[in-house]
Structures are given as C-alpha cells and as structure tokens.
Amino acid sequence: MLRKITLAATILFASLAPASAQTNTWTKLRIGVEGSYPPFSQIGTDGKLSGFDIDIANAVCAELKAECTFVQQEFDGMLPALNARKFDMIVASLTITEERKKAVDFSDPYYDVPSRWVAKAGAFKDASPASLKGKKIIVLRNSPRAKYVADNYKESEVLLAPKETEVYLELSAGRGDIALGSSVVSSEALLKKPEGKGFEQVGPVVRLAGGSGVGIAVRKTDPDLKEKINGAIKAIRANGVYNTLQKKYFDFDVSPDQ
Amino acid sequence: MIDWPIIIEALPEFFQGLKITLILLAISMSAGFVLALPLAIARVSPNPWLSRPVWVYTYVFRGTPLLVQLFMIYYGLAQFEWVRETAAWYLLKSAWFCAWLAFVLNTTAYTTEIFAGALRTTPPGELEAARSLGMSTVQIYMRILVPSALRRALPQYGNEVVMMMHATAIASAVSLVELTRVARDVYTNTLMPVEAFGTVAVFYFVLTFSMVGVFKLLERRFLVHLRPRRSQTDPGLVPNVH
Image (cartoon, rainbow over the protein chains, first blue to last red):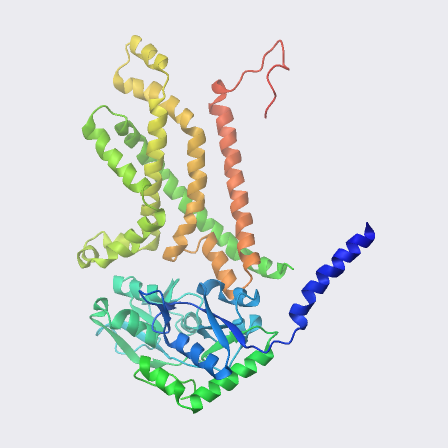
C-alpha cells in the first residue's frame, strides 16, 4: 500500500516538474488584452480586437518571430490571471506602479500619456489647489491620479468613479465640478462626443510625479521574456514601426520619453 | 498561503463597509415595509382601478434587474437637462438617495407580492367569523386580515430581507463604499483575491445567518399556532425537530 502511494506521488511530482524546469524559447506567446479602453483596446462590431495596445502587441510578436494568440480578460483579474499562467504577458495599458511591481515584472514603458483636467467651459481659469478649494473633483478609483488628487487637493471634495469612462458620465451629469482623467480617454470618451459639448480642458497637461508610463507585464519568473520584449520595443521604436502605429491613433507624441 | 496581515490591516475598512451595508439595508427595508402594506391591500382589492396599477408596478420592478434600475435612476435620469433643472435633482445628485430609491422601489415590489399572497390565503373561516360578529371592512382588515397575513408572510419576508442584504452589493456600482466595494479596493490594492473576497464572504455569511436566526426566533414567536403541537400523553409521537 505504502509503496503504491510512493509510486503515485513520484509520478505526480515527475509530471509536475518539467513545467518549471523546461527552458521556454517563447516561440508561442499568449497575450492578455482588455478590449474596452478605446482607442487603446476595443472590440469591433465584427468581434475583432483593435487598438494601439493590440497593434503594439502584434509588432512585438513580429519582432520576436513568435506565434501569438490574444486572450481577452477583464481588467480587474488581469494580474492574477498572468500569475496563474492563463497567458504569458499583458498588453493592456497597464500603468507601471510600485504596488503592481510587487506582483509582476514590467518591460520598459511603451507609451506614456499625460493626465488632463476637464470641466464645463469657463468654469475654472486654472486647476490649482486654490481654485479647486471646496469643489468636487471626479477621478478614477484606485488610480495613480486618485492618489495625486488625494495628496495635492486636500481642501477639495473627491468623487471616486469605479471606471474611467464613468468619470466622464459623472462629470456630464453634473455630480462633480471638474475631472482629472487620461488626456486621451477624456477626449475619446467625452470631448469628441455630443455629450462633451460645452466642456473643455483646463490648464496644461499634468504629469504625475513617479508616473513611469505604461508597460508590458510578465511573470517575475520569466526575466528572459522581459529582456526579449525590451529588445523588441527598442527595435520597433528604432525602425519606425512604432511611429507609424502611433500616428494611426494620436495627433501628438505618446512615446514614453519625450 | 493566506496573507493574514493584509486581512487584519483591512479589517477597519471592512467594518466601515459593514456599517454602510447595514444602513442601506435598514433604510431600504423600513421604507419598503411601510409602502408595501397599503400596496398589497390595493393589489388584492376587487376594484381594478386599485389593483391594476399596483400589478403593473410590481411586474415592471420584478421583471427588471436591480442593477438596471439603479443605473436608470443614477445615470439615466441625469442624462436629461430638464431633470437636472428641477428641485428633485438636489436629491438625485446624491448616490445615497439614488441607491435608496432603487432599493426601495425594488424591495417594495417584491414585498407587496409577498403580503398580497399572504392576504389571499387567509382561511375563509376567519373572515366568516369576523363578518358574523358584525365587523366593518376596515375592522376586518385591521384586526383579522393584516395581522394574520403578516404572520403567514414572515418566512418569505425573511428571505426577502436576506436577498436584499446581498443586493446592497450593487450600491458599489454608484460609488458607495459598502462591503463589496471595500473588498474590491483591497483586491485592487493588494492583488490578493482570496484574502479580499474571502474576508467579505465571511462577513456576508455571518450577516446572513444572524438574520436567518432572528427570523427563526420571530417565526417561533408569531407562528406558534402553525407548529405541530407536542402531545402531552405521547411525547415520542411528534419528532422533536428544533
């Protein structure tokens, strides 16, 4: 009986071991993407994924000569799914933060979009803490921007919205006076739409201290993959592919080190 | 395996969330109870001008998800410029008011049907006895129909309270920081799903079973006449269930 258990255990462990011992050459990659963050990641009426994130992922794959498949995943469960090996890397506009660095590793940033204040036209002449004293600021919950507002606008009220697109719903509904959002998403989700009529950007772009852009996430156990991705990002930025892609979506430079 | 320090550090936030959950539940259920009673009486009325509108109301609100109702109130109404210019906007601006309104409209619809069902199943003998004593319709409602219906509705009403307690999680969608929102924040900030959602599950579990316990006691008190009576001569005949 005991021998049988030992045998079974040996077989079990033997079958588990190769997964970690095997050296992976990364010729096949599964990429976690989000699909609801225009213009970075979206699903068309034909059910196809498109957007800047998707194009960057494809360009990196071409550079690595890897065969890639996309796995769509809710943003909330993205990092645990990576560590649970549902996919090998995440290309989903993931901002590099200290908290996330504890759970996963990040590549060098592949884009960096500043934040921007948005409010009813003419409501504010600037967005200084003095001008916003006693006013209600709308910002995305648990985001680096929310932390920035909490740290710098202590005399303002804050409304924390659960999703970036809801920040603009709350603003156009009048539940707050001014919003701090991604400069790109605020123009896609509000200013370019009919609901955005009468709203304008307030003050210059905001670059958060300690904000280090958006990177591709990989598991901490795969430093070799991280190096390969960093090489690929460097290559597409050098050979012009990156610039062609960003011109498709933006009329300004989103590259991380301007 | 389990990162206990994360849970312990987040406990004050969880208790704060518990407070919000309980306040939401209390203000919704009390308003729902008060509204459902007259609506249930209207619902069983032979007069179609009374019963039909209530029927339409309960069908609409039982036929759509609570989340959709909340979104309609919170985001939907805000879409119209003229709504934002009325005095009601002062209330609709608040996430608390919108959540309360949606919960009350929803639970009142269900509670109305529960009470109406209990009213309909009044034993005819009780009514005949009341009439033969010469009671007026109002007296019959006050003394016979409503008290006996509320007793019979107790088990179902207990379920409704527990369901509503679980439904308060929906308030997290409109920026109220109740239990579920706290769990999601802890998860987002620590990326530890088991610690965050496991803890909140324990909170809900304890809440649910406390409520079930309270309703068990209430049933024992108010439905004592419906329980199998223990025989004096042969105590072994009726199984001692509880």
